[in-house]
Structures are given as structure tokens and as C-alpha cells.
Image (cartoon, rainbow, N blue to C red; front, side):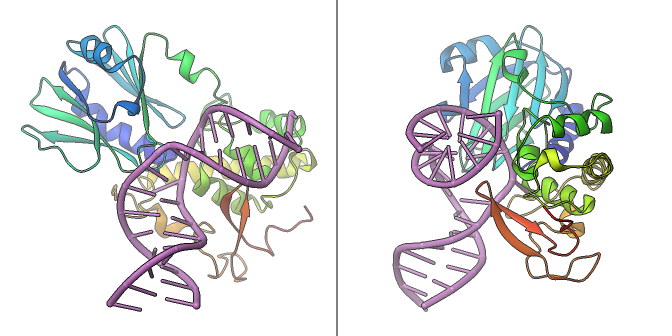
Length: 268
DNA sequence: CACGAGACCTGTTCGC
DNA sequence: TGCGAACAGGTCTCGT
């Protein structure tokens, strides 16, 4: 469910509740959630560590602890909640950390796709990621040249976390619509002018997503309201906000894709 | 290298 | 009403 803006929203909410706290206990309810280390070693290693900082890289949540880092990826249905003690275990709770401030941090994940890593070397997990789209490193010039150096359809390329990190299905459709580029357009056919539009569009949709605290779709509600301002995603049959033409749905790289056939059609 | 299909999971909505 | 199919904000692995 979460893309960069939703993860950023979660991180901002989490930070003041867990930074400075010591982890007093850990319960792993679904072993496969943990990639590394093994369950026993994980519990032994994490107890007693203090949370020094909470940050985000792409869609990963990073808890910097005293001696290692806990990385969490929410994948499709993951969520992080902080509750007061005592807590009762809920339906899809996968990992529970008990904190020194009488609160618990709960990783709840209906579909069990979410993953966590406890490691002294976060780079082993994060090393392959592309640039952060809201960082200084992500410039229009970089994007233009990076697009030209590949020969891929725009949508799957933007979803590729090794190319650019943090976009998911919603924000990719939104950025392509805002940039007036078709998801099937080949990356090496993008002109400098179009690359500039795409660069700006990516930043704009992500910044708006964060400003609106993310999108709340489906049964997992997080308080964000970006879903009320979508241009294309999930709006099949509804009018394009620019030209009124009904938005069409197609499948690209096995992901449902939403496009205005008029605005996003300067020849593929 | 680029792409499609299948896995991994559970829950909700759609269509007949 | 019932019931199977389709679909869901992600990513990995395999085969062509």
C-alpha cells in the first residue's frame, strides 16, 4: 500500500514516539517477516537497544539502534502502529516491539509481504536503490541522461527501485499524467523538454502526496487525503482533469495503469 | 538487457 | 443470494 509519501508520513508520526526509547522486548509472530537474522538471534540482539533515530530511504523505514539498524519494508499491506501498554495482539500483527515509555510498536501486515531486517550493515539492503527523487542528486539533467541510456517503457522503468527509488503504482501514474507522457513511451525517445516535465512532475506529485499525508485507499486508513486529488490513478471512466476525456485503464508490466488517451499521446 | 509470467498472501469487490 | 474471478499502494525469480 505505501509509496514514498505514505512511508514518509508514517516515519514522521513514528519518530517522536520511539526515538530515545529502549526496546525491552520483541515478539515475532510471523517468522517469515524477518529476513535476517533468525528469530532467536533477532530477539536476543534487539532487546536492550535504544532507538537513536528514525528515517526513510525510498520505501524503507530505518530505525537506527544502538548497535544495529532495523529496516522495515511495508510492501503492499504493511502498517506500523504505536499503542499504549498493555496491548492485545490483533489479527495481522507480525512483529511487536515493547518500548520503555509504556508503548509498543506494532508491525501489522495483512498480506504477509512485508519484511524486516536487523543488520549492522544497512547498505547491504539499501545499496541497490536508485536516487531519492526529492534529493539534490535527482536533477532534471540526471533524469534526461538516465532515460536516454536505457530503452524501456516509462512506467516499468519508473517503478524500478534501482532506477529511481520510492515511486509506486499510484505516484507513477500521477507523474506521467502530469508530465503528459504515455506509460508505454520508450525511455530513449524522451526529449530533454519532456524529461524536464517528467522530473518536475515526479517531484510535484510526491511533494503533494507528503503535504496531504499520503493517500488512504482501501481498508487501511492512515489519515491522508491525497486520494481525493488523483488525476488518473483509479479514475477509469472519469473525466481527465485537463481535457475531460474519460481516463482509460490498461495493463503495463502486470500493473494496472491509468492514462488520458488525449493528454498523454504525443506519439509513443 | 528488457519483458512476461508466476510466486508470495489475504481480503474485498465485481460480474454473472 | 451465491460463488468464482478479478483485483489490490510491492518485489523477487525464472525463462525467453
